[in-house]
Image (cartoon, rainbow, N blue to C red; front, side, top):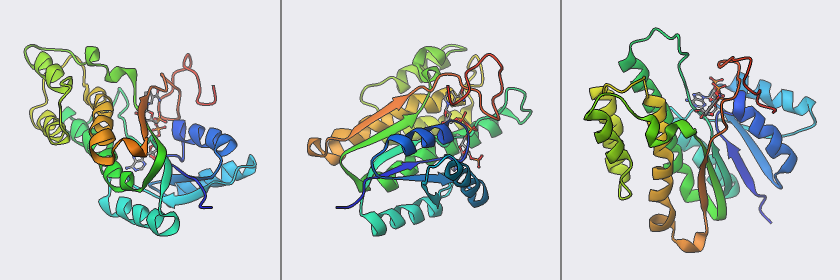
Length: 240
Ligand SMILES: NC(=O)c1ccc[n+]([C@@H]2O[C@H](COP(=O)([O-])OP(=O)(O)OC[C@H]3O[C@@H](n4cnc5c(N)ncnc54)[C@H](OP(=O)(O)O)[C@@H]3O)[C@@H](O)[C@H]2O)c1
């Protein structure tokens, strides 16, 4: 029988690495640690080996369509399927980052939204019946956290909150956001991308794969967690 296959994106450190540890212990099948950098990815696998866990490794840069397609072809050729996908990879800027907002918005939305969407386009066709997909998101993606000058903030909230929003419309909202840089209360590009994940999920569930595949696609909030990049002594570390 073909092994069950699980993939975690951006798994060489932080929350993705923590998820890897749990999956290596609990998942009945092969777990793939993917990373955009081979050295960092293999170093993370070596760390897991020391703990007695033996995941597989594959390169995956979600900011590169070539890298995504290469990985999708590898999975198709080797296993002809996928059972669990954890979309964890993302970038974020430190609060103190001095890059202009337009640059931060463009990079964040390109990697976190369009990169994740491209992963979904390439890997969802491989999902087997009963597969599970988890988008690592945040409760800060709730519409109530998207606020600022009116009427721009209300307009963005109502577009993002529309229950009939299509993927094309969502893409346009993201591109408009980068172009127009609406005057929100804070630099909320991360919030906007987090909010997008349930919509990506909804557009994929029934219409494309039908009820018989019984896919379960969800988003989760890891809560504020200390990582190497995001250091705050009062916050829990990943293993907690
Ligand atoms: N930490 C929190 O408190 C918190 C709160 C809410 C939500 N989240 C979400 O949780 C997830 C993980 O966050 P984290 O705090 O663990 O972040 P992190 O420590 O910065 O780790 C991010 C991971 O994503 C990888 N990555 C970045 N760009 C990539 C790309 N183009 N292709 C593939 N991998 C890429 C990074 O690889 P490199 O090592 O190569 O950079 C790293 O492995 C993110 O989706 C984040 O939005 C985190």
